[in-house]
Length: 168
Image (cartoon, rainbow, N blue to C red; front, side, top):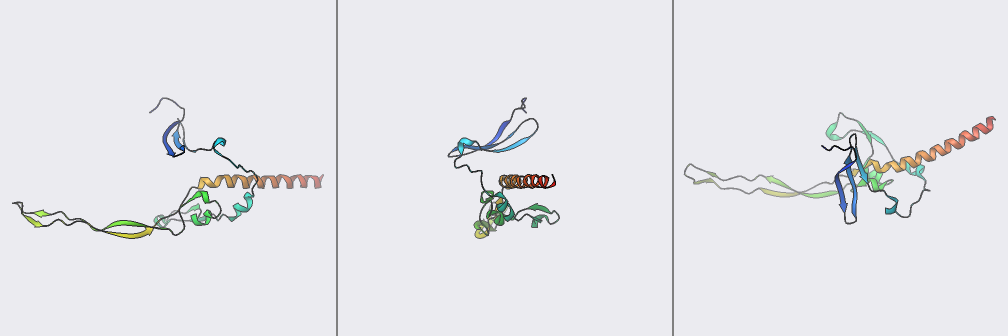
């Protein structure tokens, strides 16, 4: 427990370029921060068609197989990947090899005099191919949503101005 209300960095994330973000908290909230300083960026473009891209997203309602009783709103990762690739980790239908225990190891057993009754048996291991599931960071979709809403508000303002002029 810390006596201060300023944000403290509890988990920091680094790569070869330095710190990339952190999870921090203060007296009342937790924050998940990714570097976003303008000095880290180039080729900044404010003029792109967010509405067209937004219309390509396919929000859906579904349940996860492991939780059939809970319906949630979200996206299928491979569908969102076509529109906002930076929000998706992994590839559609990817598989990975996994080692697994076919039969467990068995310890040797001994009688009262210490004689071996059954020999120890090492575990038998195998390899299998398992799904390497895609993931989504839905927060990466927020800039697209914001830009599309701004475009919609600009159109609404323009239509209201035209309507007022026609009524006047």
